[in-house]
Amino acid sequence: MAALYNNTTSDRNFTYYCKFQEDFKYILLPVSYALVFVVGLALNAMALFVIVFRTKRWKPSTIYMFNLTMCDTLYILTLPFLIYYYADENDWPFSEPLCKIIRFLFYANLYGSILFLCCISLHRFIGICYPVRSLYWLNARRAKLVSVAVWAFVLFCQAPVLYFSRTRDRETERYCYDTTSPELFDDFLVYSSVVSVILFAVPFVVVMVCNGLMMRKLLEPGWSSQEGAEGERGTLSSRRSKQKSVKMIIIVLATFMLCFLPFHLTRSLYYSFRYLQQVNPAQVSCSLLEASNVAYKVTRPMASANSCLDPILYFLAGQDARSNLIKKSKQSKLKPAVMSQSSTTKF
Image 1 (cartoon, rainbow, N blue to C red):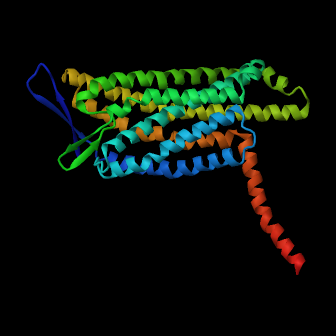
Image 2 (image 1 turned 135 degrees about the vertical axis):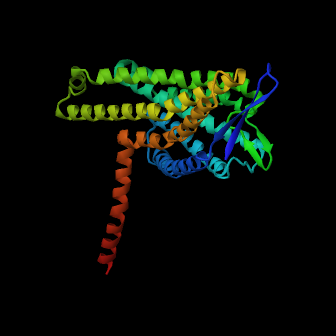
Image 3 (image 1 turned 60 degrees about the vertical axis):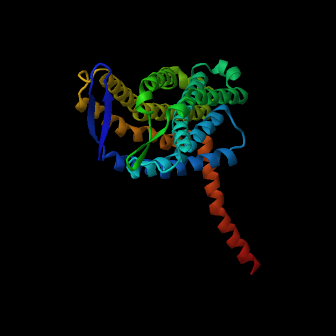
C-alpha cells in the first residue's frame, strides 16, 4: 500500500504528492511491538514483583528502578492497541479520545524512562565520584521527591500530545496520527523539537558525562585499594562493586546509543525534510523524504526495545535482586524436599 504525503504550497497553485511504499511497516511494527510486549511485560512484571514483594529496604536506587519499571510497564500496555492498528494497515477502530490517550501514554512513558535512567546515572555518579557528599545527598526521601518531580515534569511536557493527536477518516480507513493532522504539522514540529531537546538531548548529555566520569574514576589505580582497605573481604567487596558499576554503565550507554539515539535522529531528519518540502518541494526530493521516513519507521521498534533492556539493568547489575531471586528459588526447591521428608517420617 502506498502512502500519500500531501503538500500544498502557498505560492503555487498545485498539489504535490509523494508516494511512500510502506507495506513493510505493517509487518515490522506489529511483529516487533508484539515481541517487545511479550518479553518486556514478562521481565518488567518479574522486576516489579521482586521490588515490591522481595525488597525489604528501599534504597534510592530501588526507588528509581521502581519508577523506571513502572514507566516501562505502562509503555508496554499501550502496545496491543498499536499492534492492532498497524496490523490492520493504519485503520484505527477505536475512538479519537482513546487515540489521544494511547499516543500520550506511549511518549510520556518513553520519556519517563529516559529521565529515570538519567536519575540512576546521576545517583551512581555521586556515589562513586563523591562518596562523602553522597551520604547527605543520596537518601530515600530525596529520591521520592525527585521521582515525583520527574513524573510531573514529563506529564506537563507531554500534555500537548493530547491536543495534537487526532483521528481522520479517509475513504474506508480511520487514521490515528502518530504526529498530528497536516494543518497542525508546523506547530507540532516546534513542539517536538523543544521536547526532543529537553527530554532527550539534555538527559543524553548528562548520562554521557556522568558515565564517562564514572569510568575514569573506576579505572583509577587507587580506587580499589581505597575501597578495600579492610582486608581481603573489603577487596572482594570492592571488586564486586566495581563490576556492578561497570555493568550498569554498559547497559545504560547501550540503551541510549542503540534505542534512543537512532530513534530521535531519524525522527528529527524525517520531520525536518517533511517541513522543508512543505515550504519548497524543490529542496527535498520524494526519494530523500521516503528514505528518512523508512529510517524513522525502522528505528521505532529500537526505541521500544529499551523496555526489555531496563529490567536487565536491574537483574544483572543489582546484587540485591539476584540474591532475592536465588533465595526464592532455593526456598521453592527445599519445600518439596521438606514435605517428602515429613511424609516419610509420619509413616
